Image (tube, rainbow over all chains, first blue to last red):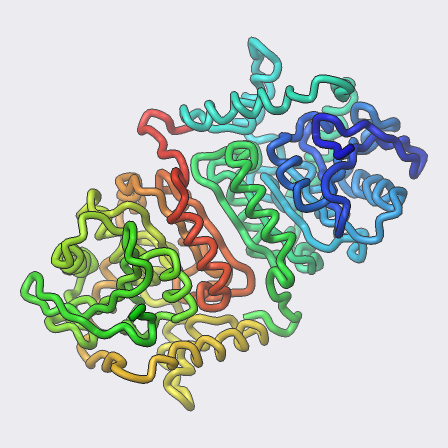
Length: 294
Length: 294
């Protein structure tokens, strides 16, 4: 049986003292793509249009990091530690090489995974995310505070504000997204417990805090990277995607129009095509030598 | 006979008192794509990998604007006037609707064409360019002054500095580009005369001059736009492509890695694929309503 986002069973693997919940599906050849999720999100917060779309050409691995939903343990209060857990998880699956996708704070984890285990990571997809000490990243943005602090008729409607702009077209795309991400009817992940958000927020404040030469570390990420965001991201400002592209040695930037934090859910077909092309390219981009900088 | 970049004859059409030189080739269905050239460039400065690549799916029209090379008349000292000439040229060909591509100062012309004749333009491709009063655009950038002021063993080697970074990979791509753009052996355009550069520089200084609310005009450009540049453009800084994307109502941004002003010549296959997908999309992106802004 070929599994999909809807049918893939939740499996478990033990590593670093944590029982990690994960799901694997898609074409089992080649380098698998490991997804790192956003603030308070579980495996069920991914859009099947994106995961199943990417799974037609590669194996896709969703997981909950330590302390999140169906995984055991505690959420550590730093992205370095979350990445150490993620690396343990990937190694526990016996995978020698993976592609890593990170969305929002999952993009912080993805960067730290690459720094900690450069030989484990082939290519990097950074979606709706930013660098350490990026613009407006020392705290939640005012827009994020308002959006996460508000109450909604239906809890899912939070994501219409987080991931989509106020435009009619974007909101319509958001309602389609909400239908898709509720499609998996059985064996859904439990919502995260009350300890997750505070630990993640503490980690965010450390990651975003101002520091000297904040973007220097990006030079150490030699993997080809694709940086994607909406042009109107109010959760992690879009300029942070530009900063990532400018400081990573070999990165392409794509900003989609009229889209907020979840641009990949607004344009899932476009996003799947862009990511697939990037991951499938024989040589996606040339890496510069250190001596080569113009 | 199916013509290509190499074989397309130079034709002429009279409009606005000017005898415009142009070349048409490619698949003659659908909406043609009109190319607007960079500083002191002629029809022969386009890369056949790009023009022939795009011509497999659409008709491509190259031309020299007034006063440039094989076209008669004088180069006007403003982009508004250059655009008025370009609009006359397009209408003289009897074309009711075109897609417009502009590279560098050709991107300024492309924006002005769209403002002056919005019904004539279906979609817009802005490459290695920027908005009015963009960053570092009040004069030539220091890098541009050095590069255009230097002397070269072979005159063509100027373009290795303008269009490519100093990295080994980028320079190697540059040498391949120079071979390609010399492939057309017969009926090449004459180089521009000595009046072209001063008039274009005067126009550049007006376009780039600081002004109040410089980017407001971009809201009037309602066409779907694709903004493309190298991540390390030293001629028109890459941040200007970001500014274009942020202020155009419906624009996608792509920045390629390790590439300078001529990123489309460094990655011609990637560029052709990106532009083709954008121009062929049934609905490339939703346009926001004025009341929709997030």
